[in-house]
Image (cartoon, each protein chain N blue to C red):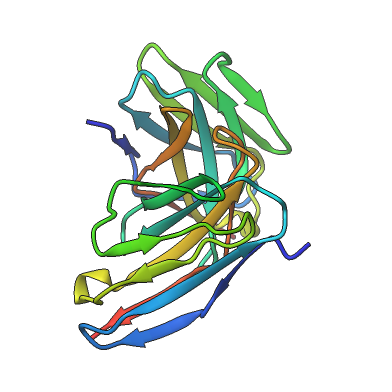
Length: 114
Length: 112
């Protein structure tokens, strides 16, 4: 079945270090992948996305890597800051007759230690 | 631009009551969807709509109804609330399937 999972439910890093959050997906037909950041009491906030025809995409301090061979997605955050503390979700877009079905992973809580 | 707005922010219902969660967006997005988020879990798709007059079921549609009479609004109705529907509900919209989804702030619903 379709599932998106995360290898680690929690991750603690020192401020200024780089962090890597991993995600496994199961549907080989998924064509679009997104990372969201969710702070307490708020809705998910888009961070970065990548389409299935790419293997790497960079944003400001963030990089997403996609390995379709092993169905693996990762989010790298450079020089982490206290404001990066949040829960991070990966999501895969499963095409459903021209519609969009986002399947979310469980989430990883990232804590930045001073 | 208000983005995606949801009302109410909090709601407590008794088992068997019905209510409507409101969602509106001012970005002229065709695609809208409803998710629920339970503790320790990711978001699960309840219903979605690819445009006015068109809706379809997501992953967990039972106990919920939706309609899309305008591009801007996508209300979610709980027909007969059950404790299992205690959750945080998020509405989202995007330009089209496969594009960035913008999420509302959520409605925290408790059913006793």
